[in-house]
Structure formats: C-alpha cells, structure tokens
Image 1: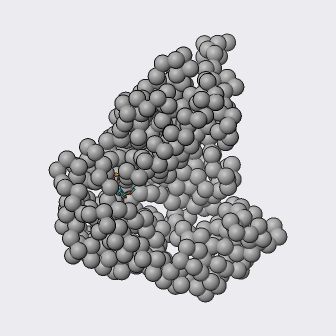
Image 2: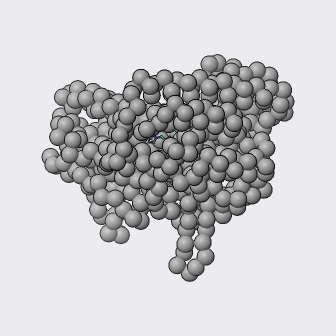
Image 3: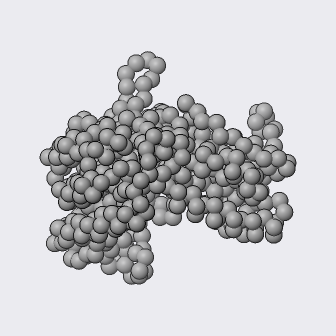
Length: 453
Ligand code: 5AD
Ligand code: SF4
C-alpha cells in the first residue's frame, strides 16, 4: 500500500458548502477549491443547512462588493449559534486584504488567500481543533495547473479554464495586483488537457481566463515560447465543435498575431472584451493604463478589418480622481464612436493601498459619480439595443445552452458574438447542439428568433 493511502483523509464525510462572489476567476477558483477538498474526503453540498464547512470566496474590487460580503458573514452568526462545530472560512481577495479584521470579527475561523487553496484541508483541520487557520501567502509560481476543477455549473455546456493568475499592471485604481499577486502563466499542456476532458464530457464552449490574457507566456526550460495566440490555437485545435473565448484583454497588449489567429479559426468566438476604462487620454494616463484613446481605436480598427462581425464589449469607470466634465464627455464620445455591443459600467471606488488611494484625491462627489454613471448606462442601453437591431433578419449559429428562463417551451443559446438568443424548442434539439437561428425580434438584452436548421 502506498504511504498516501494510509494517510487518513481529514474530511471524511464532512459536507462542504461554497459561496462565490465576484469575477469569473473566482468561479473558477471555487471549482479548484472544491476539487482539492473532495480529494480530502469532503462532500460538496448546495444546501447550506447541512454544511459542516462554509467557505466564502470573496471579491475586493469595489467597496460595495466587500460590504455585501460583510453583511453575509453577519448572517452566518445565526448558523454558528445553531451548529456548534460549524467552520466558516473566508477565501480569495478579501481574505488577502483584510486578514486581521476578518479574524477579529468572531465568525470567521479560516482566512485563506488566492494562492493558499492547497493548504485548505490543513486550515480546516486547525479550525476544527479550535485554532484559527490562516494562510495569506502569495506565490510566484502557483497556478493549480495539475488540479482538475470540479465543475459547479449547471448547464454542462460552458466552462471556464484558468490560464494564468495575478496581474503586473498596477492600474492606479485596481486592488487586484495586491490581492492576487504577480502574474504567472499555467503550463499550456495542462490547459489543453483540461479543454479535451471538458469536450469529451460534452462541454462545447470554454472561456480562457486571466486578468490580462494577452500577456500569457509559457517558456519551457528547453527554449521556445508559447504565447497567447499560440495557446488559443492549441485549444481551438481540440475540436472544431469546441468554441473558444477568452477574458480579459488589456488593450496595450492586444497583438496583430492574436487577431490573425482569431480570424483564421472559425471556432474562436467573434467577441473581444476590451476594457477601455475611460475615453479621455488625461484619465488613461492618471489610471496608468499605458495606452491612449488613439491606440485603443487603432486596435479596434485592426480587429474589425479582419473580423467585421466581431462583437466588442468593455469596462468603464465613472468618476475617477480628477475627472472633469470634459473627460466624462470623452468617454461618452468613445462609446458612440466604438458602438459597444455591451459594457460593464462602474462608479470609481477607492481601494486602500492602490496607487490612486496613496497619491490621488478621490475628489468627485458621490452624486456626480452617480449622474455620470447613469449617463453612461443610458447611452450603453441605446447602443446595445442598436447593436441587437442590426442583427434582425440575420442568421446566426447558436450553441444551445438549455431551457430559457421564461418558458420551458423555449430554449436559449448564444451566438459566437456572445449574444443570448431565445427561440421555440423543437424535437430533438438539446443543450450542446449547434443550430442556425434567424433573428426576428430583440430587446436590449436578448435576441429572439426561429430555428432555420
Ligand atoms: N472602482 C471601480 N471599478 C473598478 N474596477 C477595477 N477597480 C475598480 C475600482 N477601484 C473595474 C474595472 C475593471 C473591472 C473588472 O472592474 O473596470 O476592468
Ligand atoms: Fe486591475 Fe488593471 Fe490588472 Fe485589470 S489589468 S486586474 S484593471 S490592475
């Protein structure tokens, strides 16, 4: 018998519940965490009432994300009173940022940063033994490359694959480089293996995830390099029936090589998420984004030259330090000029420890931030609707994801451009199938259509 087979599993039969907040990277991290815990004998449950261990995977990107999680931790007091041996752990970005505050809160037994998930069985064992389990060590190497994530999604069609961790960009507003540490890329062969296993299990749409996928780089000791376009091609090669997406791209690193690889491979989706953050060069400099509005528009023109049907989405921040009405107007102008298909829009939220918090004044009053954000949202609604109206009458290949939310007589699925389409169900059509749908109607969030083939 091997030594590890003699080692008792710390979790035998204990039930683990995981709640995830924040970005897709966190969703992917929770799947890694559950995999590590299952290997130690824990059983995953979706029912918090039967959990022996509750882990909350947290986000620090804006203050309201953290406030929501504090509120949730407060609710756990009730569970802890009812069940004496219940263990509560906070993992992820907030754990990294607020270790002391969390431990002093009285509810939290475990605090584990994003690079400490392999240590979780030991941390839980410590908590069960009556002490705090704490590990917020950040790593230069950890990529969890060898771990096979347990898929927690429901539809069995879409999955995330984490290809790198951390961020070296230090955008002035952003807490990510502090909570997730330095950038490191995962071994491409483990990524391709994961994609193959997903495909064989019926998945048809994978999203390659990183804070800045365009700087992915794997340099084996025997020389050579696998860069991001190479990786995209390797994953796309798994099967022509596997759709490949990626997020997030930093505009400063979006290469012509990537655009060429995308254009040459029909199963790489025609959708690029390219966060602009602001349309004003003055703000882009203050944000340390390292590109100009002109560079950004140049990259976009290059994408559209090779892929005229490519959807473009973005992230925008309203009310960053020192933003004038003129700067804000530049953002609105940029939005119109690009005609974004969709956007994530935020009010600037000062994060302690970032360059902006240390060196700049958070000087835009809350009501002005709100007014500017509302203008941005209103304009984006108009642009999203216009984008969907342009699709009316056209046919799209749609990957079926399952029943639509509104009616079991309807199915939904996505186009390569990442737009959701709802259509009447038909015999024999199921999740994971590709069909062609003609668009007959739309709202600003959804396309409606009928099956053509
Ligand atoms: N305040 C508001 N929005 C932020 N983002 C990142 N940091 C902040 C902040 N401090 C936004 C950016 C980023 C997205 C993930 O979140 O737009 O692209
Ligand atoms: Fe934050 Fe900028 Fe890194 Fe994105 S690229 S995670 S915005 S520091």
